[in-house]
Image (cartoon, rainbow over all chains, first blue to last red; front, top):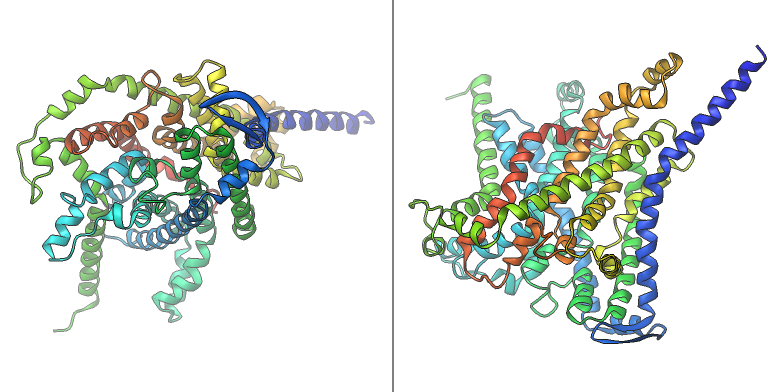
Length: 299
Length: 278
């Protein structure tokens, strides 16, 4: 009888160490994955290091930082990064929500419509960019030009005249289905009885949406915002394939600016300083995001 | 003429359907157009007005296969996607299980921290990773890609599994433990069957993200370990107006994952709720 609490304590103890053993790999691996490159980036950012001029890596203090941040592309890139993320978030959440409400209604061939609607999410970003750049936005042969001609409008040279907006369109096309997928699933779990009751009480479509559906979707919206921010803050492939950051810096985001510094100017030091800026920006955004939606996420 | 309720309902039903089909076809059009263009000659591809009817040709496909070994790139994509996903799942399943069933004081903070590591832009750490890979003599090899893909998707996989595992009723586990089940037995016979949907869903999302990943594949591979995403990127500028060939290459690069996605749609959605469905 006396040994009973003791053994259960021991098992308890064994359990806990096993639990920690199981938790450890993912935490340690991510920590290493974060810290090793991060400290290397930090180190490079304080030394003079250009792949074209091999030599001793001299400590030069903040020179790389001043060089990167006084680059005339720095503020446009910062601004473009934020505009890109913000616009894509707004478009995909609003469109995704509208589409989710639409396919939540009964109609013929709903299954096929759903499959068609989510397809863009499976397309490679590089392919996405190629389709839009060539077949849709080409100023001579693109479909958009054909449509503009048909209505006797002046065709727009999308990637030249509105490069950032063009990239926002491509990315939104790809990610609206992601929002749709998540909202769709969430709508299916909504309490229909509650909606029926509200309807009987004389609630209109709008107030049902506003006071029942929207609160129900708070968490899915938080998830969509969170995950998309993660992906779009360092958007790269679409710019790589279409505009190359131009014309000028009109579609240069931070990721592209750093890439250009590192792989086109071979300046590892300055590119690393840029990397540190990007990491700081990511942390600022992460801080606000986690405060805003994190509570909703970690319920 | 006044309509009775069922007539009005029928009209609404058809109007909604018509509208939904219109929207769906519009949004699907770029993909459809890519597939159609891949069966045209280069001249037909840029014909004005665009051709809706034409004599389909398979020339582009055979040419792509001739010039760049499609199968090699496809296999690289397959190996890296599956390898990265299995590696990530092998790390994440036990961890997420431990966190969901034995949450500590800081479990939520740890998970949020994990997600925040995904916000670190890849370019910020590109140079170190590039150099480490180079030092290891592993540039243009699929192994670093597999490891990077696994680590890259680990936070999201952890999150999906955690929220999914959390929904599993604890009573079942306690009952099993009373009956003397070991942790391994518990995992194999109870948790994995019950959480199979979540694991499948996280795995599917990870496969899709790996298959489409372009940044690391472009930077770290060349002709040997190149994935389809990197192959397509190489078609971006110098090819100029070879739309039909680019379309054929793109169609071949995307077809496997689109078809895969269509078939797995239901499983994919299961865990994408992130515990949002009670």
